[in-house]
Amino acid sequence: MERRKFLAQAALAATATSTALLAGCGEKEEKSGGPAVQTAAKTAIKWRLQTYAGPALAEHVIKPSINAFNKVANGEMVIELYFADQLVPTGELFRAMQTGTIDAVQSDDDSIAAPTDIRVFGGYFPFATRYSLDVPALFHNYGLNEIWREAYDEVENVTWLSSGSWDPCHFNTVKPINTLADLKGLRIFTFPTAGKFLARFGVVPVTLPWSDVPAAIQTGELDGLAWSGITEDYTVGWADVTPYFLTNHISGAWIGSYFVNDKSWEKVPEHLKTLYKLCIDSSHYYRQHWYWGGEADLRVKGPKMKLTTIPAAEWATVENEAHQFWDEIAATSPRCAKVVQIFREYNDLMTKAGPPYRYA
Image (cartoon, rainbow, N blue to C red; front, side, top):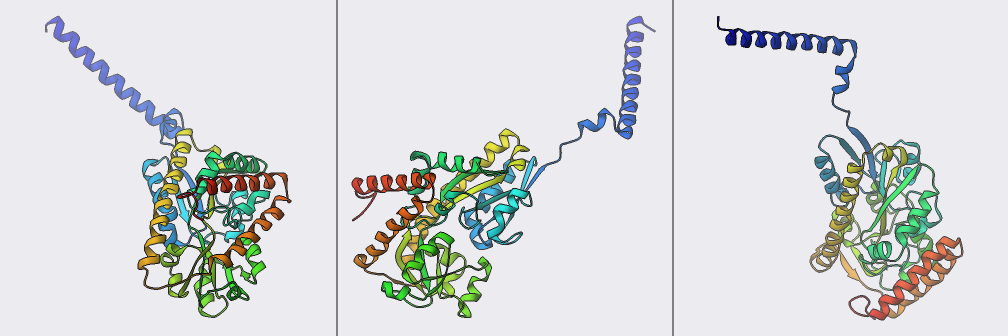
């Protein structure tokens, strides 16, 4: 045999032997739990996130963004989405998140009983906003982001991530409202702080699980809601049981937030934290146009609800009373006073700016 061919064949034989030996070592290490085990794929991070919204509403206010996150996370992390009261009652959401029963929450501060002085501004703080764009402007350009971050830094085991706007707050009822006197005695499902304010006009605030509202209206336990705009009335089926919609609103936009358990957040790598924040922003953007378009379209084309209006001069008394309510809230803490002052300065500037920012 030629020397060159002999050397080539010897090299091939040596390579085959080495490969076999290495494979055998790998098998032994896998069986003994050695280094080969360390090459196994990491287990995906899993979260349980509960929203304030029921299934039909969640299809718009959060589900698209969570679906997008799960797709782009590419198996590294999976967020399981749960709806209103599905795992824990809405009023217990904050505590459940603190203890790690759930990992994350989408809701307003007020409904979930957040243990902060600023919780009263979450949800519908009377007349603080006129339009949905007021909310991101206030948070990003007028200092509310920093105030919310400061407040939740004082709360154990929970991180506040972001706030955005939802729909305006209107009355939808079983009988028409044409004057302030028509509000007296109405049993209304609403948010804690909004209910406290509306009680000044004879409204009786009622707290129920979200899913029980339609049945409560049909049995006469409730006379209506001050919980949403007309888009939600149609989306979740309330337009089927409350045939009247009052065009006067007590707030131009609901302020809702995203929260997360600290330990759950710490386990997430930076690139997935960034992805989650981007998906939150995507949700904020989607709601802006979905509600804005829906509110106008359904007022004009919606076949189920008759619109009523309290005259502007009479409704102005409600807005004036709201500013007295602001003074009372401002007196509860220096931080609340700071938020109220921001609302005053912002709304004064918008009024001076004139149309389209504010109309007389």
